[in-house]
Structures are given as structure tokens and as C-alpha cells.
Image 1 (cartoon, protein in one colour):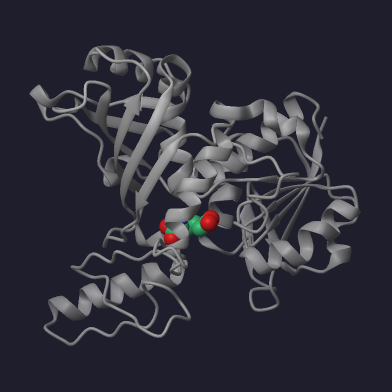
Image 2: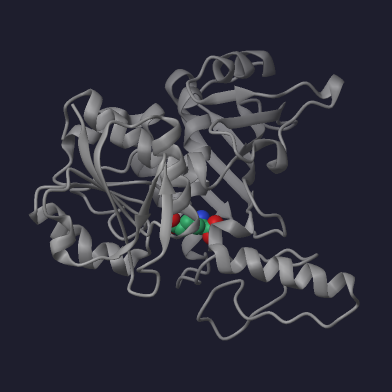
Length: 344
Ligand code: 11C
């Protein structure tokens, strides 16, 4: 069986990776429709051997579509996802528009694939920094009952889109040429203050909430509990933007429901987990870095250490390509599950 697939936001950083992933996975496509805002309509994009012209999304664009992958920002999803569902499509949405809605499954297939079947037309793809963390923590939760998570992130600029990638390039060139740096975008487009990202670290990703945490931090906290079906889990997050292009890295401290565990049993669980690659050998200086992970679909874990004061505590270093497993790859995996299990 083959499917009519639409990609909304096809010209964006994630949209492009969605097309690449559909092609790599040879997704059974009968008809492909590439959609965007009016600004990018008319752009020509290649898929396999064909050139497609990107069309402006309208409610009617979704007539006959079976699966619609959305990654064009929350407001586009809010406007068009219900229109797509009304016309019979199943939407896989990569924005935060519907993630916390009760009726919308929030899915990382290695973690909670079975939630997909509860969908009422929309399935949400979690935030990139959440996806890689829960993919690595789920095997530990299953076996040893996760109690607490404290995460600090080291996030790539591509998480903030192509404009942020260009801002880093421009600032890096200016800095090396001895010129003044201009910052117009980061940490958050539309906020009053902007700070240079080149040769810097910005402890703000997305807007501040009333409780002093940023929206990115609250996404990690709330989405982790929802995906793991664990409201009792203690989660705290600090999210930081760093000047590299691809892959998010995370320093994660966990407390488990079992004491007296060794590093090797944690390594063993992670080594056999789906979608996770263990890269952990301090004797050989082996650990994952953002550059190594870029372009690969796996979640990489290293630097696993036992906490020195808490017998049930461990520290992990988790790295994954934010545009692949963090976005496009996970979305296409959800589409594959829908098709494989006949959950459309
Ligand atoms: C970032 N994690 O790195 C964000 C991007 O909710 O899907 C993803 C935003 C989202 O800036």
C-alpha cells in the first residue's frame, strides 16, 4: 500500500530533513505534496528523481492527503492541522501546538509507540531535547524505576532555525575579522534583547515563564512526564544555547528506585536499547560529541558515572542530531508505525 503524504514547512531546516528521511527510509509514497507559507511558495525542491514546486498551504491543500507532516511553526499547525484532520489526514505535528493536549499522543516510538493508536487525528512529535533524553532514560525507567532527573542542555543553533544558523556564521566571521558583532535574533526572535551567540553561551532558549524557567525548560519537564506516563517524576532543566550548528548535548543526572547498581549494569541496559548507541570508554577517551552525532539517527550516550554521594544517582552525557531523531527522523518513524500497525 502507498500513501498520499504532505510536508508542511518543506523549505525549513526540519522540513528538508523530513524529505531526506522519507527518501532514505523509502517511505511508501503514492503522491507527495510540499506546502509552506506564501513566503516560500514557488520554491523548487528535489525528492528522489523529481522536482516539486512548493505550494502555499490552504485548507483545500489537504484534500486526499493520508499523512501530513507539519513543521512550519505552531501558528501554522494550529490553523491547518484541524483542516487536514477534517479532510481525513492524520497529522504528525513537530511543533509545540498540541503536545500537551490530552487527546494528542506525544510519541517517541522506542518509548511509547503504543500511544499512537489513541490518536484522534493528530500525533505530536516532542521537542528535540526531550526526545533524545527520554529515548535514553526509558530503558532505565523500565528496569530501575526513574525517580528524578536534573538536566542541563548544550543546544545547537539549528534548533532555532536556519536564520539562527546564519546569525552564528555571520558573527563568527565578524569576530575573527576583528569587527563588532551584531545580534538580531538569538536568544529569541521577537524578544527585546539579543546577545551574540558566537564564542558565547546563552542560558535562554525560548521565552521565560512566570516561574522563572524558560518555555524550552518547561517543555522538557512536562513532555518527559507525559511520554513516560509518570507525573510523579521529579524533573528540573536548564537549557543553554551554544555556538555549534547541529546536535544537542545534555548532561543528565538521574536518581533510580534501586540502590547499589554499578555503571556496567546501566551501560548494559543502554547498549541493548533500541535507537541508542553506547559510546562510553573513558580509558580510550571514547564519548559522543555533537559533531560525531550530526547526520546520524541514533541517540548516543557516554560518560556514565555513579554519583559520589547518592547511591541511586548516575550522571550521563546524551547527544543526538536535533534535526533527525530530535525532529524529522522521529516524525517519519511515527508515520512508519502508523502504516505498519494500520493505525491510520
Ligand atoms: C531549540 N528545542 O533548540 C528547540 C527547537 O518545540 O519543537 C524545537 C522547538 C520545539 O530551540
